[in-house]
Length: 290
Length: 287
Image (cartoon, rainbow over all chains, first blue to last red; front, side):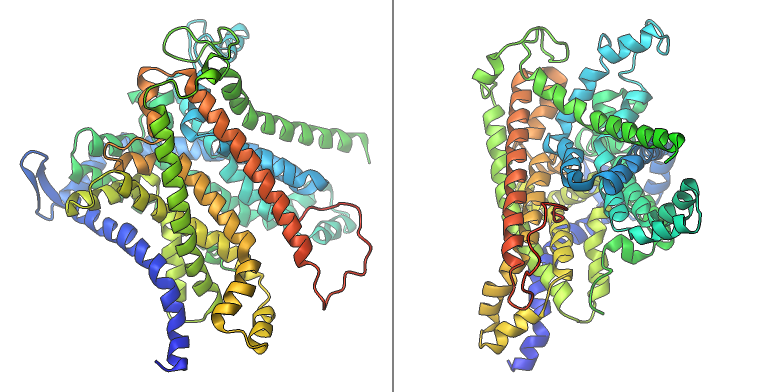
């Protein structure tokens, strides 16, 4: 091989193992799952490929409720996480001073504990005779025989908590990069604080908001752990259905169709956001050579 | 500064403080409840302080094996994903070639895919091909897969601010491409590689969903908890979670310290003499 040819081939050689792995264990499985979603049959008789596209319409009409609930819960959790996360990221970025990194470390501390245990911890916090329920009962927000566990509240609370750091980190990364001189310019032009925030800081932080909401919404909509541990079948989301169709009922075609529908909805949402934010902010490829 | 403005400032800081407390309380509860001596099968209600569970953290049958599986898979998948991901990131940032934009997008897709879908697709794959047998090896394959994109993105962000003239200098001084890589490139991107590896390890040891779909009969620590959550939750689970927590905190502190030292060393470059006297220990470098 000539030196020049070798140089041209080098990037492809570097890419080969990583891309190969993703092709083999991400792209090919998606194709196989797509074929699976078009099959008919049962686990006993075996499944045959009959290009049964009605699997999709059936899945959608059978589990419409769970789909809607997933997006409702994920949307709620994302909104609450934004309301909690934005001021937190703002304070760390603009007022953290030399404690910034330490404060940021505190934000990711929940990640150091296994996801399932964090969720079990919420089971403890919201349990029927726990402090939170007792307090809320005393001030009359929760009825005396009312409970928080196994309700929409507990599931959304669990989801919000588990994905909150995904909201705070991109928001912080974005706010921290805002040039302080822009804010000063706003004040020099006699902008009041609210004006400077609404017309300078907030617009400049939009890429962070978009990244944070996406990173929260996507895993939240596919989640099934919170609904399983903190809820009942009445709070089950689409993830619970996919999980049980695959692993308990062995109804692979329906489960595969549901997975594809979920992924399609997610891609649509990502693409809409990408149009708003610009793909570069999304893919993190701003600084590459071109 | 008006009084009203100061009041607003105070309110905002208090709000952020409450948000931090909200993040930390569940973790504190886990640590506290690892010292509980629960009656009954579930560790949800505080009874009394006890060292029982700490004296024998592996006393619950199966918990030790589960933890060992988790650690082995985390170490192996971290090595695999870090090597493959670093090579991919190098290719994507350092070279211009056809198809770079779609490849960037392709690597991003797994991150935008819900975990259930990743797990379900892999399971479809293994079931249809009938190989390899579901178990340790399929979990490992899955973990390398979902960690790869994270590694690529982490290393890439480090490579973007990279000073290429250092490599050119090495080549001018007669270094072969391999020597340049080993002696110049690799040490410079090492902080990025280390953060990527730490991230991969944390994601792997914590993963439940994708593992749950592809585990066969192999049990990892999160799967053990899942099984326990329906039957009985011994405080030992909280003890091991606390141990993992303390270990991770120690690793984080160690890495931050090590990176700061490395950055201090790297900042001593002959063409930029550090004439300014060392200022107060101010803004820590972004980790």
